[in-house]
Amino acid sequence: MSSSRPETTAAAETGNNTGFRPLLIGTLAALTGLIAGFVAYALYLSIALVTNIVFFQRIGWTLPSLAHHTLGWFVLLVPAAGAFIVALMAKYGSPKIRGHGIPEAMEAVLINGSRIAPQVAVLKPISAAIAIGTGGPFGAEGPIIQTGGSIGSLIGQLIETSASERKVLLGCGAAAGMAATFGTPIAAVIFAIELLLFEFKARSFTPLVIATTLATTIHTVLIGPGPMFHIGAIDFGKPDILPFFVVFGIVAGFAAVGLSGALYWIEDRFDDLPIDELWKPVIGGVCLGLIGWFEPRVLGVGYDVITDILNGRLALAALLSIAVFKLAALLLSLGSGTSGGLLAPTFMIGGALGGAFAMLVNAAMPGLHLDPAAFALVGMAALFAAASRATFAFIVFAFETTHSYDAVLPLMLTAVIAAGLARLFMTNSIMTEKLARRGLMVHSEYEVDPFRQMLVEDVMDPDPLTVPAGLKLSDLARRIAEGDVRLRGRHGLPIVDTDGKLTGIVTRADILVAIEEDRDGDDTVLDIGHGNVVVAWPDETVHDAVERMLRAGVGRLPVVARDDVRQIVGYLGRADILKARFERHRQERDLEPGLITRTVSAKPRTQPT
Image 1 (cartoon, rainbow, N blue to C red):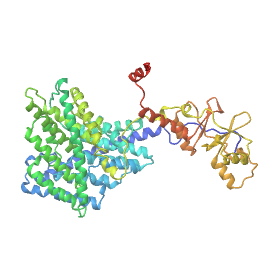
Image 2: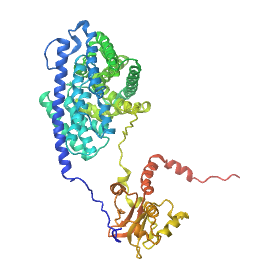
Image 3: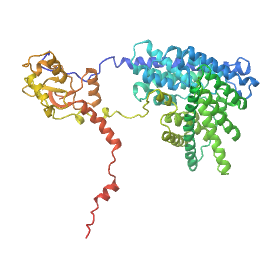
Image 4: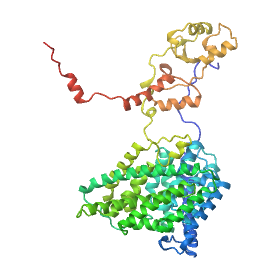
């Protein structure tokens, strides 16, 4: 022992310069946002180029409508050919390019320290351009979200960063990709928080804003101002039609449950096929070709069809046809293991479902005049919000798309009802089901850490057991062996001098080491204990005290007065720390008597005669 007087460890943060790191991460977030924005635009051009070459045999840099393509019966073969190329890339490049990308980004955050392999950043956009350009019924946003996340992760791997900082940069890249694609920066920030970062803190929020602002600026300059979908005036009606949005919220909720369940059921059926993984996407491509022969509007990215739906330009029969055939195309293609985004096809299905709902209600109740465009917009947001459980993000997304305050109430009501219903019937979301099957559980609830809300004095033992500095090792060992109830459960004992002042601490491990070393029985606890004592203060949070424990590698802290670091006022052990968690559990689970119950209980009971 180095000293008889304890050298207390303060609560000051250690490690990196806390003023420099936020500036560095903010700068890297800006770089990530710029690169992701340009990559998103490059992917947009690549999809447009491949689509024009394949379906119209021309060079073009704008996305065409595939409703009147010139392939003829070759449309039966082209999606299968594209799927075969993507399957080759997945087999010999990286299997991470399969699927719609967001679960893979979530997996990198959860188990891989937010590290994504460089080949994913290269192969994912190329595979998406081929898959979508050859008719795949996907959007570009899922691949660019994964690609943007890969860019942020790679930038975070170039220099020394913590796993948390890489996670922030990964989220910045993903959010920037979404913002650069759709021109919705606020929704992109919330999307990253809800599905990738699993936190809402200044350290992540500020870089996200920087990245999405720059990515949206690139969208504005290169693609045009405003969101991806250009929508005319929409009539959301008076408050008396809100009940119809409630009913539609129930419809959207069941649709989300069906979409997620059907996707993974078909994926399981493809997994069960006794053939090489290389050929499964080809089968999906053949199915897609047959669907595209009957309904060519479901082929490709479909932004033009979504715009038509949101502007009320399609009849009921067309909406029903698009909803059914787009759903079948999405399930068979994505379930077979090819590459593509889930957002755009879900938007198309949800929008068509909403528009059709409004038209059917109008037919059943003439004179009601529900606007199909209003229900299409709400359906677009509600279906994906319920399926993904990113409810807030897609309420904001739809609002940013319309810039109409009148949309807020219908959006909020419908999306929340749909999401609530989906939670009743879905253990996992469409994003987390794949991760759950791999044994990864995603915590999607955001709450304040009880350790940050409670003070040490709220949970500490205010009358701790101490031992005098002159107590012999042999006497203490005998007391423990005899089962002294005062020592039961104590793994550390503060050592005090004759004035009751803190001098050191001795642990059970110290005693066992001393016994194994056959130390002299006359050695005192001060001889075998520690003089460098890590302490806590009663007016600090449990979080700060626990963090100090972890940094020091100890399991208990003497609690001392602020004005005298040798004056013991309490003891904080592991069991005491758990009290904070138990109190939160009690507040959430225990039912307390209400006013009615207390009133009834207080009434005097009539004694029987």
